[in-house]
Image (tube, rainbow, N blue to C red; front, side, top):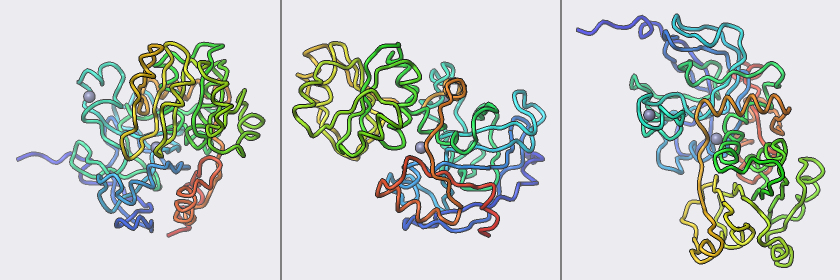
Length: 362
Ligand SMILES: [Zn+2]
Ligand SMILES: [Zn+2]
């Protein structure tokens, strides 16, 4: 007979908003979280960003959703309890959790601080945890997470505008670093000016890069340059502008998740230039080999970042005062916000004020 662990006997009552089926409509949901284990950090959620993938997941568009589904993987809050073996955090600390809450800790990726590429990586919501329970995300009042997957949020960063860094921020920060597109003076293009793109511009500028935003909509030019600090703006549909910019970029961070042509982007790269995809269109993109051969160019990909790098990203953000541009909303607005995300009607991220509004939504 296997003895029950104490934490199994006293689960924590949690309250959140969940989708119950593929309609994706969210409504109030009461559930249990495991009691704080010896290596767990328990924290009161104060804010949670709304990522575009939340929208796909609540509607089961990637086929991996399990219901009820509590979304949210841009979570920040304040620690309320720590397990006996927790070393890095104490009650009252400001913390965050991003896209993952577990991994195997022994594979090649895990031992190289790349938990994000662990084959057994456990997503923050709609996944199976080590103990067989379902993971629930940050559209909820309380989180219990292994301290290895907890990020420390420096005091100088505002919690609400920092939440989106935990997914959108690391998604663009990691490829800039890994692909070596982080040397002052380098010229980097950012394709798409949404949640990911606006973060890419901010991080790239803080690294001292010369940044060009590439977009289909000329209307975003003023915003990109005057507000976000980009150096220049390219309308991708303008053949003359694109032609004039050919062979000028060391790298491009492509955040677009709709179908689009890679050839014109590859044309913008210098010799040895790198085109990095961080958005995932539903169907395969066309890869024109000849345009890669001529100039020894490469196309790569990147998905979030490991825990060590995520902490490094947050510390870099604190040092350079980088936060997301957000619209803070009450919990009950979440379904309307989902519809607005679908229409790209947000500048640039919705952040749910969980701390002040979730209980009044009971
Ligand atoms: Zn995300
Ligand atoms: Zn692993």
